[in-house]
Image (cartoon, rainbow, N blue to C red; front, side, top):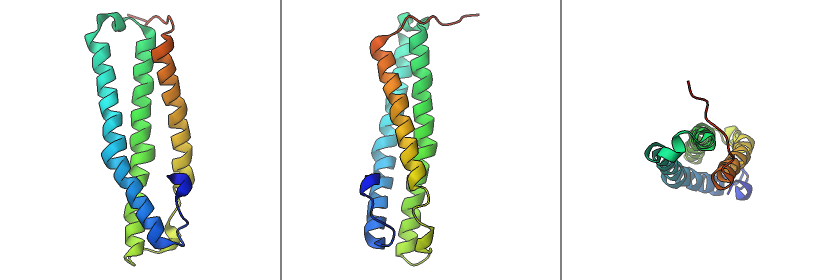
Length: 134
């Protein structure tokens, strides 16, 4: 959707797209990310075979990283830009202030894609990493 976002000069279309993106991030992206993280952590906690598997803990760490990055780098900026664009459409905010986070959001999504890919590879490959215990 980021690549299809119209320019802020088409304010009505821009505000509609950013509002849609904010709603998707709020009601679909973030809850599904949280549910996936919780399910993965529960799987590690409930299956004793995963307790000493280093790959499982590395997968948990990358899952937490994806969750936090999604929260800070995607959800927040998308919600903020949706609010700003609605304010610009209502005449309360200067439209020139819009689209400042577009490139950062795009970069964050690419990083999230890379980390999520590593996370999936760890789950499939399951390298023999041993957890360091004290």
